[in-house]
Image (tube, rainbow, N blue to C red; front, side, top):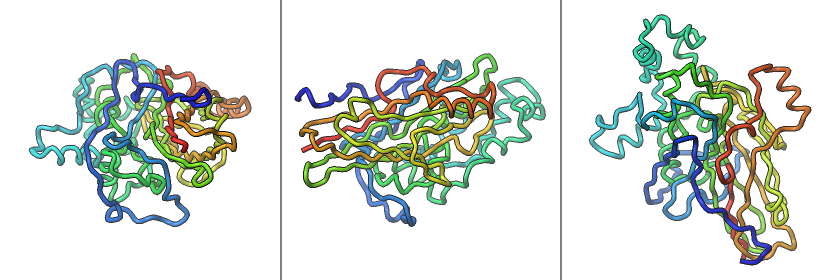
Length: 338
């Protein structure tokens, strides 16, 4: 590899403290038109999410929480109830929130009367946890299952009825819901975020196909109680070889900017807890053939935005860049240039 080539970083998983994020890995490909119909004004192109046998990866960074050190078991779904393995994996992605019984489980864990649990979480009822979210799509579980298994590729088609549903993301029914079923007031999660899929691939050819486009879902880490300012920037090395543009889709509007505000997921999910990030890149004229790792980092937002958000949210504001950073980049595109 020449000196001009950006070397691919080793390691494809990013770790939270004491936790490996698990993504289901199954082989095979299928046609997706039976499950999803494209909508107007939505892109159907994007980078390849899997490399042959790899399912999409999720990366998450957050501050220390004792909840995440517990055994990786779900409090809302029992694998022993599913004689067929595929049935269980599909059930993992079903947003059957009326069956979670979060307050009932919290009452048992806290040894409190269930009537006291809503006030414990500063909520009126359990339904309020998800009340700000868009309604999930009718075919949500099918698409989420295919996506997690590396069998769904046109993620630019997915709107807030998909990417704003926590059931889309790895470990929600294990780690995510545990903040409600086994709450720990001695350990507050003040910042943290995740990216899904965190690693994508594409191949370009000079003089023929010189542009790539990818979509990444950027979301608040489980248990986070703060509003987090985020700026996503391509690495300086990546900008030597590609002209890169970033746009942010919150489900209602798209802005051509690199900065946005992540909202909390505890004790309830706020509307803008997850965003669709669209990243486009174009070869610069002098970029030589080779294998490139185009990396994106989370940085501190401009001062004027920090001041605005701090004024609006007071002590509940933080910068996402303050979260504990594992090795590697939260977003990485591997680009082969011929």
